Image (cartoon, rainbow, N blue to C red):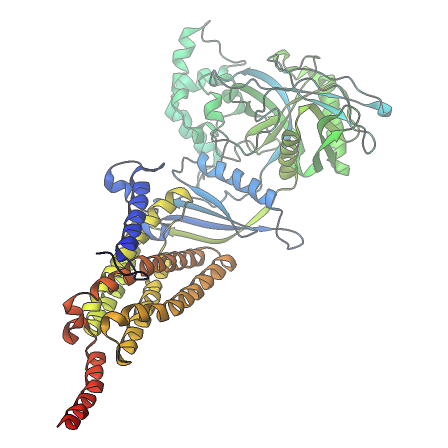
Amino acid sequence: MAPPQGQMRPGRQLAVLGLIFTVLYLLVFFAAGAKGSWTERLEPKLGLDLIGGTRMTLEAATEAGQAPPASSLEEARQIIQARVDGRGVAEAEVVTEGNRNIVISVPGQNADLDDVGTPAELRFRKVLKTVDGGGPVNAAPSPGASASPAPSGSPAPSGSASPSGSPAPDVTSSPGAGGGQGGGAPAPTPTPSGSASPAPSASASAAPAAPGDQTLEAQRAAVEQKVGAEAWAAATALQAPADFSADPALAEKLKPFAELTPQEIRVLPASIQFNVPTITCEKLDQRPPGSIKESDQQVVACESGQQKNLLDVAKVEGTDVEDADGVLDQTTSQWVVSLDFTGSGQSKWTNLTREAYNNTDSQCDQAALGDEGRCRVAVVLDNQIISSPEIQGVLTGDSQITGSFTNATASELASQLRYGALPLTFQPQEAQNITATLGTEHLRAGLLAAGIGMLLVIIYAFFYYRLLGSVIFLSLVLSAILVFGALVVLGRQIGFTLTLAGIAGFIVSLGVAADSFVIYFERLKDEIRDGRSPRSAVPRAWARARRTIISANAISIMAAVVLYLVSVGTVQGFAFALGLATILDLVVVFLFRHPIMAMFARTPAFLSPRVSGLGRALHTQDDDEAPTTGKTRVKEA
């Protein structure tokens, strides 16, 4: 028979709860990111304090003491991410925290992160030689660029291409405030060297391998010993890139160089890095950052992963660039990148363009020249060439890079030039190395504390509420299962990491859950003391306790939100865990606790004071009823 109108149907709420569980665990086992065995799919994402690893917090320092622009902080994060990845560190996570912090987390291992926050190195180097770097076949062609003077503000010719024949952006001088120079040749699809793809990719260098106490000479001697005396002598004797097709025996001699790691390649002389074909762009791009930071040495760098370039000493550095901006050229209606140099930087830039334009001492190899037969100048950020314009004149003023830029690509290149010129300075604020053993102990201690807390609540519940204690026990178990599934899903979807502070948040949430039990059950006792039967007292107690339960949980949720917004680091994890557990507790209260109480109220055991835990309330009700019955009997007598 259907329940009377207005009476709740507990089966519906329990069915909704069952549906929530079904959907949640379908996401756990089958949603995107679920990999491995069934048990592996049930593993939440654990923090460093639970599994061990390395964590470092870097704070951006500015001259005015204000927070840096969000765009600069994000670009710094991307470069630091590439540096960490370049060390071969697995599953490293680099995130911004607040408005000035970058947090680096490397789970499961102790990593050397001391120098990943060093400023990016921007250098302007003349391209002396170019050779195929043995990169992937599908790598985009490396765009060159051209430079042209603009005397008296007249338009300058442009339109040179890279040595590979691909169209390239141009560089022009920008007299006065506006006047960009026209004539940009079509630019290729965006690549790291043409139109400045944003952060360095995985192939870009990330952080330098710590050389330890070894000197460069000692490291180089170790590499020489590894490749063997014959291979080393053959490589040192090369005056130009080796041609294996003409000399197969030489290919066999130089074969050991193919076995070197990027960290070992970084200590080789530039001539060997350039002339040995088995040292490919793939490995050169994976060298640690700082591998080519020395301004007074020739270096080797690649464009687009396929073109290996021997670069001259750096005669213009990032600190010589005062500003760079992507602007719309009003003359040609094309997007260009405007370069402004400092006073001393302008002199260095003029001298560099004079050298490149005149090809002083014929330093630039024929293969390295642009379409107009002039030297190119590579703009190098960390180990990556982001542009290499051909110089078509002596540039005595501020310059523009022109070409088929869009607003986004022009702003992107300008941002890279600005960042290299005025890099953020980072100060380490916190560094932790946690061993895997210590992390396991933290996890065990956290779970033990959570188990003890739940056990104490359950013991108290059965002692004080008896049958109602089973409702508390089942509610806590269901809440725990919901929380666990949510942790797994949130770890995959938004990267939420469970830390020791998060476990503390869940333990505190047990108190919030216990409060809602006490409010409901004590209200139920009050209703029985007022003379109502246990069955009729359940819905009335719920109606009166519901508002209090919602208010108490809402306050806990608001406190967790405020704490999350104003805090950083592990405190945020505590706040998130507390808020999540409180929300899920409300779900269990409405969809399980009240429906199951309505079902218990219909059982005979619920009417037994010894079994239900309502003993005192029921005895009070009996005591109140007894005198009334006695008076009636006397009157009848």
